[in-house]
Length: 106
Image (cartoon, rainbow, N blue to C red; front, top):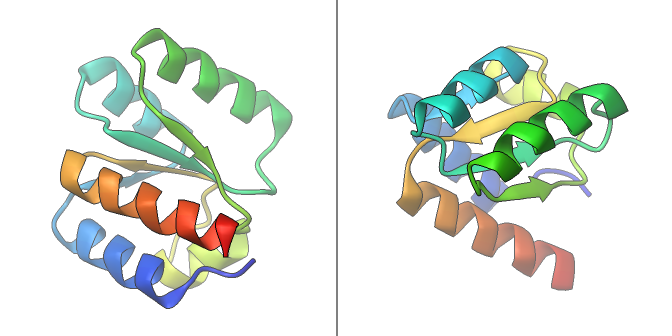
């Protein structure tokens, strides 16, 4: 399922606010540093990367959300191909999770 406009807009605002990290290394740093609020995974993320990020997130009890998005969609939106997006602000994370849950139900 493609990135819905509401999610895309919120992620863009999150990025402009400096509260969005892309890629495994940045996700790991945000999780270990205690400022990650939520981690989003793309559908085409490698199994190795998925297992590694889940390991770090579970240790710190950070929610991880599997999306139907692909890395190419992320690249079109942010100019960087990434399979892991880390939201580093609780309000943004909560709203993104709500939108994604609505998307999965609807």
